[in-house]
Amino acid sequence: MSLQAIVLTLLSLSVSTIAAPARITARLSPGAATTNDNIQGWLDNIANVNGFLNTAAAGTLTGPALANSASLLLQDIPGAAADEPNRLMALSGLISPADTTAVSASEDLMTIFGGVLGNLTTIVDNSGDAAVISSAVDQINCLRCNFVLPDIDQVFAGAVANNAGATSATTVGPLVCPIPAAGSFVCPAT
Image 1 (tube, rainbow, N blue to C red):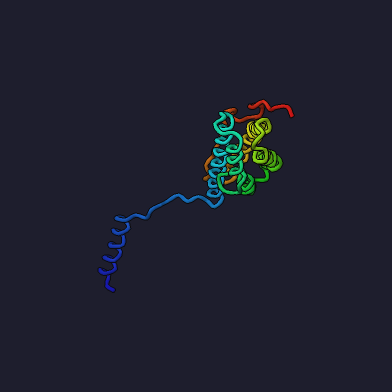
Image 2 (tube, helix red, strand yellow):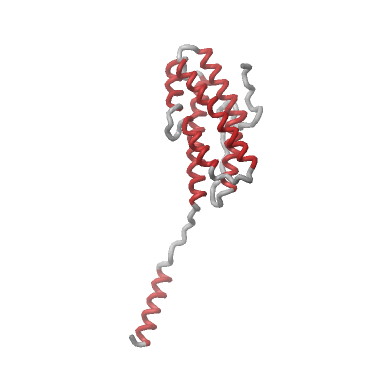
């Protein structure tokens, strides 16, 4: 190949590179992508449970209709309350063991979730008893407002802090405690 042909080849490569620059796209690390997916999935679960609790508080669904709504939340599918422990397990694995606040919140959630799911089961099993349903809804609000949602915020923060590129998020509570925190809902006497 002649010198002139080599120069023309190099020039054509340079021109094509300038004319069509390579796209630079930001890629999330696998940990950040998994964190974001699980946070978003958990926020969807929370929104569905909040919708149920708001409906129960408003009295727009009662008895069997409310029990049917509760039974949907007990299904182990994305968007349901029963999916929340799955999200917890995924995000707990993405928290640094040195983040004692997030680790403690994760451990706390592992023990509390049973109370929420148990009260949903009580609603399903007692669809004809308004007093039992009301008490179960109050117990769910107590657990979620004072413990579950604040702990989820700590798990979110821990997973985001340990996975560069992940997006932070905070939970929103049902109408009885739109900004969940310890003491944000007065728990009924048991």
